[in-house]
Length: 112
Image (cartoon, rainbow, N blue to C red; front, side, top):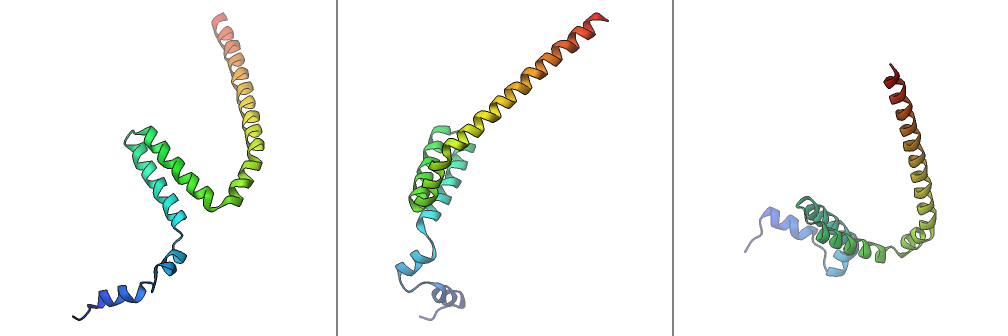
């Protein structure tokens, strides 16, 4: 049986063994990307809990693949939390000032 030109092209691009294919396409990255897509689809369909579980599974696999990045993130996490707290305090102060200005504006408008 002779091969068509498309079949010959496919066979020419296939790796000789599975190890070569695995080296070309890291399964952990493919899995993490797949779980991200699956999680987005589940979220769009309104299935929040399964979407969170799928995203968490993908995150765990991605972190296993890149342990140094996970360790660095873990070490920097307290700084990120502190930055988030500082930002929330600034937002809280801004809202409080805005509320005071609104009350003053209502008093001025009410006097007329």
